[in-house]
Length: 473
Image (cartoon, rainbow, N blue to C red; front, side, top):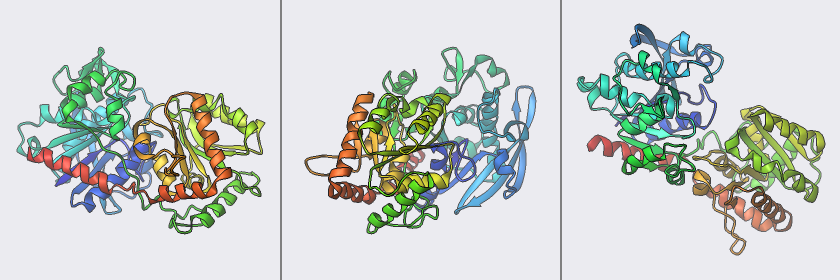
């Protein structure tokens, strides 16, 4: 089985969110299952400037009346072949996204990937497309390459990582697309990259079974639920995994002290003490510490914290170390809390991998009160480090976190159902109470959490089964 994974970002080369982590880890897991899995992505400035990739060759694609250069570079990382599509006009920029010509940039990328196969000399059985930036590719493949034997046998899978971001652009963009018009391209009077992929890919997946069910509803589907309903029997949810080599408290070089499930008590205590001291908080008292590592956007449920956190700080002994960046209203909210409660609340506005790892290891409870969460990686990483997630029961959070049962002591975290600040407050007080009053149960939950296997092994096997079924159908 040969698979080419096509995405707009991938760790460790370029990352803005969880998609990059998936692209960095899934190919390795597929290779371990016997699949020749490779990755292709844009040759962004931050990758090109590292000057570690090798030039393979070039091609051209038509965009409107122009022929655009497609350079192909290659680099092997952790046993996986990564190919990069080079065109300075489109990709030699400081940021990955957020430009007025994003539609044209990623349309070019979709055309370029298919031409790149000739340069690479790799014609896969499956092209696995990810999110809207690759949404035109299944249709381009059908329209422009059906007459070529090496292309017309290729099957396509499209994975939805977040249905909120669909790639919506004016319909007059058709003037630069070298493909015939189809109703698959259009939605609401615009070109919609994600809708195109949903209609034209051979199979559609998303990143957790619960999110799959949610996006088929009006509330979570962002108007594409009816389109997904048309592909109901070709649509499945496969939970993401995490890179268990990178996220391993026993070997993570970013931690103050390494530990495993047998030594977590001493290990977490050492990490907690050092984390508090690094952030300028008193480490002499044994109090629960909440952590958060998140993009600060509406999706992440920060709105639920805003009306209740003063109450929590006034009426408990908990401390908070929160990391994130995004909407100014949330960043300013964190800054104001730090100003009002300098001995209880600290924030890190921005993102740092080493600091994030220290938060995962040094906190007791990890906050993810998301409005929606297709899969979520933070809760699985937190459990890997023995930090109990506190989550809303949505998407992948519901699929991966077992709620604390006060009668049996079972559970790998704390959960609540309604998107309501007072429900969040109630479960935060429950977590604080358990930490302060029943360490035996709290530590038992840590063991249960650290015992869970959230590697890519099982999920990669499901993807491979899907690939085989498509190829053999």
